[in-house]
Image 1 (cartoon, one colour):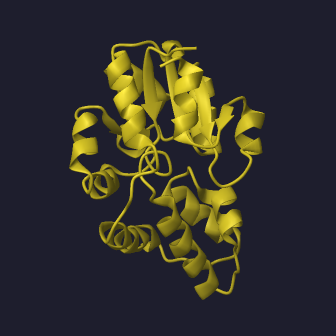
Image 2: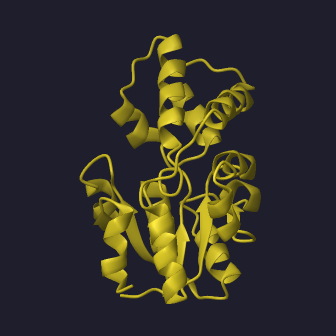
Length: 215
């Protein structure tokens, strides 16, 4: 079904930034005597905020300082600034959407500063989202709160139910479903079963989307 607009997550959907965050989280846990695999970190933390990650790591028995969140961000920003690639197929997909006259926006649980660091390395792509780049933290409605996706849809002058959400995390998928959007789960690292179980249409790459949308 062709959407009237498309609402993208940022990390892991537009920019390939999640690997750096996962590695740092693994390092932090290991430094405190807790061993976590990349899959465990992805399952537990990807799609949330660093604040929720801080709380969950404490629940695992890891003693973290109150300023851990800001120190984590400093370390993450430095890693991302050293080089962050686009997810394969992003530019081609945006080209197809433009040709079809379908507008798009980004809704991320990351801070705006993080998106400027990662997307800023790709100015041609960044320019295509000018005025349509939103942070759930800044808006006070991080996923799975549906408010972020509703805000993104409104920025395009559209109803949420007429928009497609593309996200790679359970929190983003759940937020999209709660907002009433058509939801597509991007699963590049596994079979996407957790996303499908929530009600998302699962795809393994961005190139799978145009045929589903008839564009």
